[in-house]
Amino acid sequence: MTARVRRPVRPGHATEAPAQAEIIAACRARGWRVQRVVAGKARGGKVRMAEDGHPDVAVFPGSGVVAFLEVKSSSGEPSDAQLGWAARERPRGYVVEFVRTADEALAAVERAIRGAK
Image 1 (cartoon, rainbow, N blue to C red):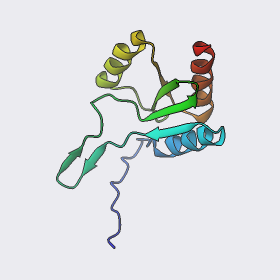
Image 2 (tube, rainbow, N blue to C red; image 1 turned 90 degrees about the vertical axis):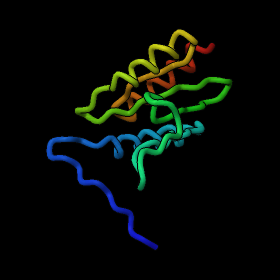
Image 3 (spheres, rainbow, N blue to C red; image 1 turned 45 degrees about the vertical axis):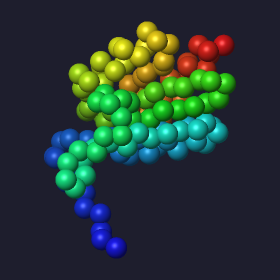
Image 4 (spheres, rainbow, N blue to C red; image 1 turned 30 degrees about the vertical axis):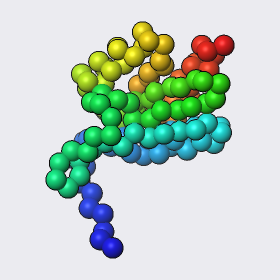
């Protein structure tokens, strides 16, 4: 088995991976189904599992509710593609939120649940 090689994080550039892991764990602890959308670079080019701008995480708390969460690091800002995806899907009734912490994510999903009632 070969070891996984990780790109080094640039100095002063935070990664969103720890926040994403915490958010997923917090949502699952509530009993919600969570799907992480995998995208990024792989050997030979970019891996596309969804269109550009698709949020990192989809949370399904039940009763037909879905909340899309784009996880940003403490210094990260949404890309134009991410802003465009949210702008297209919100008018269609989807909850799309940009979050940095598990508390923000849980609050976003709770708002989605309340909005569906």
